[in-house]
Image (tube, rainbow, N blue to C red; front, top):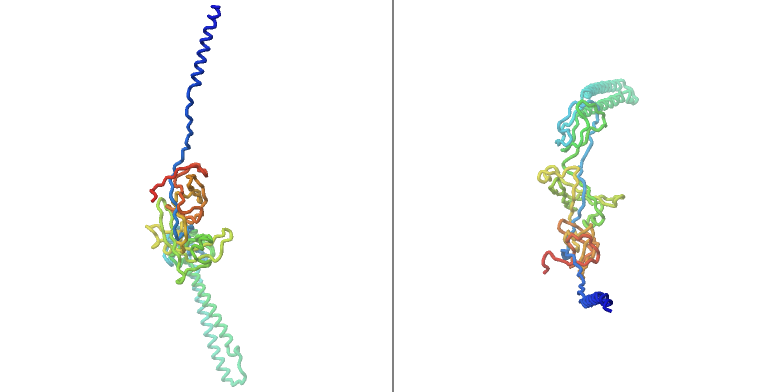
Length: 390
């Protein structure tokens, strides 16, 4: 019996200890469970406002000369002189001698033509004298019949007169050819390209280069039908004293600086481009390399410029900061439940500071101006106004 107690006593102690521990664990109070609050994303917002605005039409185009020609000689020969002003990019005055073709053969032709005129003049005077003699002989002969023109030498006179006119025409042609050995143009301009050099033989009809006038440049501006309606101008419009030319503001970046110029729309095409369905307006800038140049920078031929044409009619628009516009036609709006909504808007116009839209938002809507990574429609957000709302 004592032996049994010695063996079972430790087991009973261990068992009792285990039961006590289990009882203590079971009696321990359970920790309180707290629901974690979802952390909302804080975003800056601005309120949409409604305004009556005159929308500016924005488009782009390339500057091109109003007048540009190829220098094509009307006579052939060797180039014996090339002016320094006949170089790519150089400016020249009206009727400047740009190049000269060897005129020796044309001077000889002119002298020969002068000799033929003198010969024809002599022949005419001879025939006139003969006609006078024959007229007297016929009258003194007492003939009763009417004389013929040939008998009175009148036919020969008319032939001599025709030969004199032909000789004079040949002389005029020879003098023209002689003058055409000098290559000139009747306007002030600049050289775009030169394709000949001193000593080169050129043929009549072959190009020697290209030049353009610098009195006026043009910019072809593509417009949609909606933009043309906004300008209240018809197809086929031409500026005149009665129909004023709408003003256009041009701009372009040169290096790190933006330059501005002013021009006017002078006409609108009378047809629609079949491939693009656009209508083209032509704007002009006068004296682009002189008076129109801004801070010494001309609106140069070949330059690509932005154009802004002021509209003529007011319309209602919803105005918001430029930062609110995303992906050209989307905005993020925070609704009354502070949930984000992704909306598509119909953009009228944009600038560096604001954007005007026709639809997609309403006055008072809170549009997001903060960057939003991974925006999801319906996500919970906390709106923050940059300025206190009155």
